[in-house]
Length: 434
Ligand SMILES: [Zn+2]
Image (cartoon, rainbow, N blue to C red; front, top):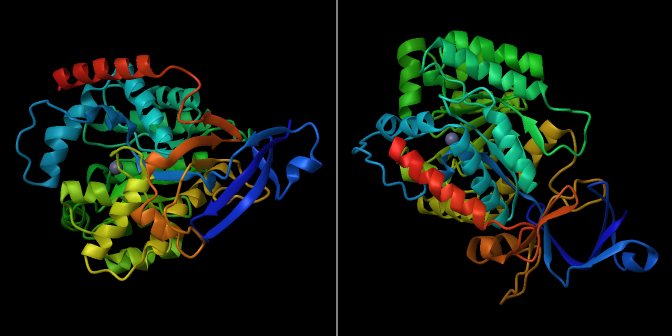
């Protein structure tokens, strides 16, 4: 049946657009018509009044780790970590090893709930649980599907726990990708081929990742040069930049998701741009790990924004991306960051083979809906400014994915108290195990 969202304010961050009093007709999870007074010409349609609420194309978090959702406020005994590799050793590589099926279930469920509450319609996740690899991506898929959140999932292959663990990671990526029915245009979940980072992937692993990409038709999702250590390691052991090395194995293409890239050289940025690869910028995580600032964001052709496990609130990540750049003396204004934020939707297009990121006929009906009572005029010229200085996740009223409300009037269609209680229990268990 046709559904009409009536009297909406269509708002788009990039290209910027604001139109009031619009009706949006939806069918089979897509936008089929947009105009004024569609309600009158469509007898029998289900009319859903929007009362002027802002309807934006869905917010996409282009890099996240739901396995870290239970690390918030962690009180496990973490020794002082003076550098990036110590942070991995003392915190993240202890945490991921302590994850079992039950902990991952709880972590994925609250990760997905928190994302939707923040107005995020899709999360591109990068998963690690070395003691529970086989079947881990299905646990994540179940959580995404229960909540109705869209996602692209992968397992972080690494050789840091030996060759058997590395091969198990590759197998999990391939099996999961093959389990997806790509003919189903309403599927919520897609797959990428995950790798932790070049400094924990030997040549054999990279060779196998290339085979996995060829076999599944997906792209790589990997951290690169997050810290200067990754570059130094590559120069020391392979005498080349990390991205040159990935390129030598044929891993860069239009579906490649290269994460962080704080220390990329000019040469590596050229490689990124020539191959059409994406760079995912995670400003809060970079600041928190003190790995440096990605000064070259302006030179990257395909830049998108992720949170790297610090929740999924893209309003907040957007603000940090803007302000960090201003603080570093950069020349960009909020409208450039609106373009970066919007670009997460391009990644969905590559993986789902559908149109995302605009409120236009033919596009998927994934929307972030806000009840924003603006104290100043809002229009196409200043919407990025509203996003930098006002609009936030507290304005999220509803979230629609595939034409279905998964969150409406600030409520889920099921009780969430039990899910949060379960998560607190699992978090305590996880911290004890660490
Ligand atoms: Zn990450």
